[in-house]
Length: 456
Image (cartoon, rainbow, N blue to C red; front, side, top):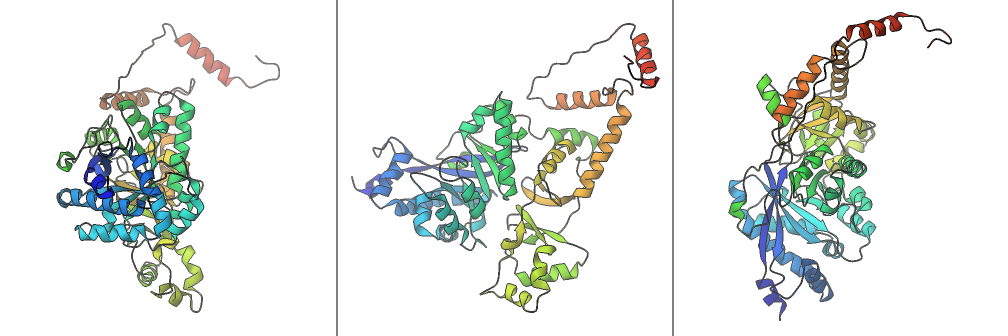
């Protein structure tokens, strides 16, 4: 059978990538279907055969065109992105795959920024060479980059460190192991932390149960995809704008009844700098807003990528020819070379969850706040410290001075959250001790007595 005959038997199916907190469809991933009709047991064996014949790059090129052709009409009416799988061996031998896919997106009327090259590793690959080749390319106005199956095979920490992908995908083997196993959950939480340190957002792949989706949200994943939401479908119009995610937007629902979201009064709306902005404009922004020591940086889609800090630019700004060199279009630097990672949190998150995210970073100016994945403001570190102080004061005010146990306010808040979390079963037990006052009085007397040697 000729290779062209094999390609004709293939079709593209799509599966949604969904925000784990809101249920909004963020993007779709394109899958290849029909390899069995062409005589291959799996997509991996089909790609391996393409590689042996020297046709892998051509195969990936054709599959990218098929995916874009099937998706572009849907994308015109829905602001969602598209993940397209490309074999890592193709990137290793091509060097400009992001440029090629970006041009293909333009031919189909799609913005390059809405397309993400989803790199999957097959066979024996030198991750250091692959990462360096990818990181050496100009990423401005190009499509995004994702690691498929991070922490497995060749696409591990070296690729994350050098290539700085926009997304990291955690495979189902990690997801299913988290359920009911605290140590595995903590392990994946650390993977999420490492990905965020590199400026990437995290997608949990292969989610099949509501319990798995809840655990993914607990460890900090940004998005989920899998059979729980929808099976891959060749009919792109069957994709939905919003999906039901177990326990989604609990924080938003509780806050809505109180009239506002928890972080509304805490964030500062700092106008961001676009990642493709010329360096002259960046210097001018710092000059014009002299008291500002940093600015958030976002992509054209509104997705935050980190911060540009004045301190990193001083070496060029105050040297004799540094500013001219950095601004030179031919020899100068791009803004993304100076962007530092910054943690992100959804505006609907509870203060406790935001503090948890903040605590994972040893040194950060604050947290970028997003709504449905789009930047909306910045939460400064000093505001987080104020939140911590207010929480400690409220806790101290509410707790029993003798037992140090939480009082009625904390109990009522917990019950309110439990009632809002309609997707989870909660059990409540109430204990009432008779004649407790004598014991309470005895505790008070013991606390008032001075400590003495030998006192029991």
